[in-house]
Structure formats: C-alpha cells, structure tokens
Image (cartoon, rainbow, N blue to C red; front, side):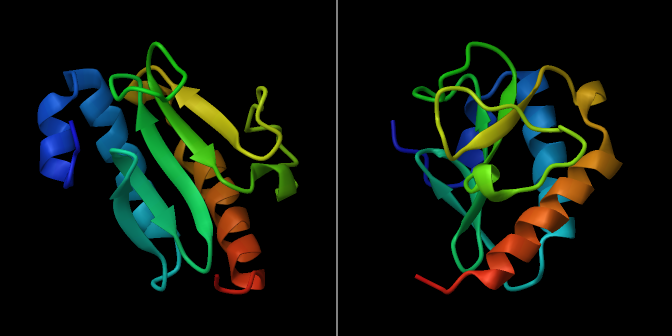
Length: 128
C-alpha cells in the first residue's frame, strides 16, 4: 500500500504509534528552521532542508527494521556530536536513531537539542 498523506498514515497506525508520531512531528516542525519541509517518503514522515534531516518510522509501517514503537532516525546522525549520547546506532554507519515506545518516553529538551544540531549541520550542507 502506498501512503500519500498523513491522514492515510494516521488511519492505519495503532493508537500509541499515532500519538507518538504526532508528538514527534509537532516537535520537529516547531524546531526545524522555516526552510525545512516535510513529505511522505517510504510511507513515513520525512523531513528535509538542503538535504535529508530526519524521519519518523512507526513499527507498523513495513521495512522500518523495528518491531515495536516509533523510530526517529537522523539521516546524518554519524556527523552529529550528540554530546549527551541521545542517539543509538545499529548496523547502519550513517543513520543514528532513538526509538520511543510510549509518548511518555519523549523528553522535549534533549530532542530539541539534537534537532537544532541536525538543523545546523543541514545549514552547512549544499543543496543537492
């Protein structure tokens, strides 16, 4: 199934994943600079500026690599300083991520801090 918009995505998600996805999207759109945009790509919310910044991948959407929760992945996570050790990295050398299992797991301040760092990195990159 090809998801074309957020409404279609939200209709297919279980309640907890929908809430987590919505909260993450709100924080991301409030934090990233105005030139950044959101689109649905690979059936999930995807945020980009000059280049790809981050994506929100609920476990219910196939091919995300997680069985439970919602993954927030940073495209250039390997280039972030992440002094607080907020992000994890698996087998992918570039994408670093954090998985949220409930909306209560979302701590706004550390998330905003890493989003601002990712936005600053994006601002230094040339547009593709």
